[in-house]
Image (cartoon, rainbow, N blue to C red; front, side):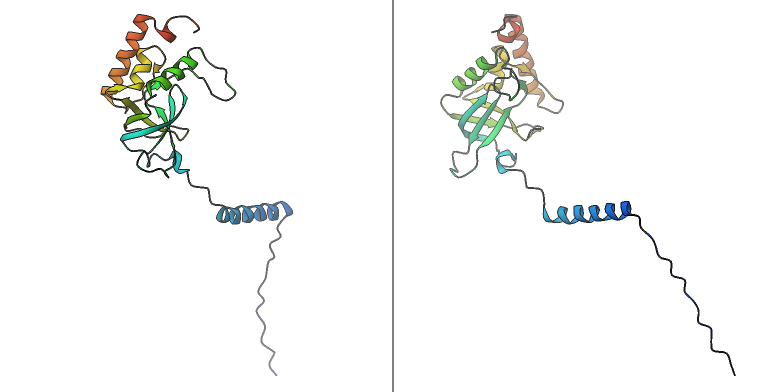
Length: 192
């Protein structure tokens, strides 16, 4: 008689997982599933630089000295676009949880007066959007640039970045020097 064949034994090892490891795996699975279900919302069209084109626009409202909201006069259904004036920085007038800075209200009033006709022309540069999602532009009424006028009247500082138009940077620096020489607005030493 022959002996029955020996069965080869496969050794099965059970992997024991500790509760913390199981908990981490469950959390990772939930996060992965939630990531597939909740996709981030696209940037609102009102903040998209893709909608802002050079050309004629209509003023919707002035937010403060260096921020305005415009509408496309050819498309009444298009969303308004928030524009931050490129190359300048005016004193704060409406920033939440921030005091109104000297010359901020005057800068806002100047911008309102400058744009009172409602129609303006936009010129773009390489930088199209700032870190807050606002479109960046130079704003003109006729041949006069609002960005430069604010600086020339001492209601804004030139705030230039590498890559911005060299010609515009020269204009804004020249306007700032003229305001400093005249001790106008923020350069006067007076609070306002």
